[in-house]
Image (cartoon, rainbow, N blue to C red; front, side):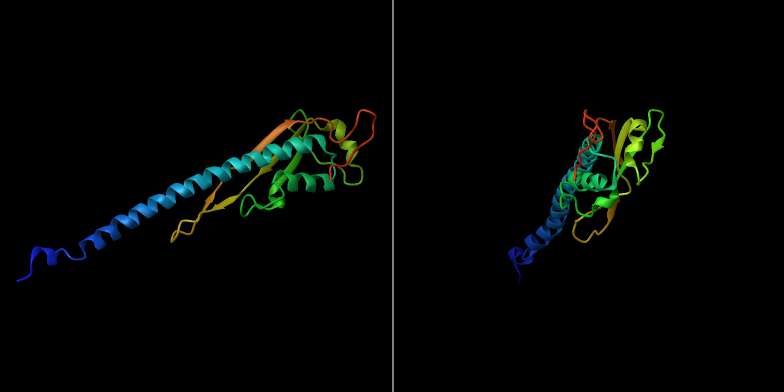
Amino acid sequence: MPTNKNKQRGATSVEFAIIGVVFFMVLFAVIEFGRLMFVMETLDEITRRGARLAAVCPVDAASVSFVQNQAMFNGGVVAGLEAEMINVTFWEQDGTEVIPDPADPESAIPLIDYVRVGIDNFQHQMLIPTLNFTIPMPDFNTTIPSESLGVHPDGSSASCS
């Protein structure tokens, strides 16, 4: 006749399997939530850094490219973020966007009152095992008043690149 001890054989393994799955799912969820908060804070910091740089750099394509690369810490900090996803725009006092002429970008400087850097439509890839999905991030924008826009007090301009 089997004893009670033999009837309980393997029960500990089954209990651990049930509790272990729940424990590890919660553990991975906490880690992923921390990653999500890090990514959101980093995206916000990227727009802040980009706006600060764009306010003091000349209004030309080379400087915009420089701002995009420098703002994202030269890449690699946020997976999936490319320099082209960072939008640098210039605005007048009344909220009208200023689009500089590529042939003479300095002609737009007297019109520019604000610089805005934004990241739109970024998708954060979650890394929880067995749950492969992305989370759409909100749009991040930083707008600050324009400063020198690369023009020195003596009238000369400097490159940021």
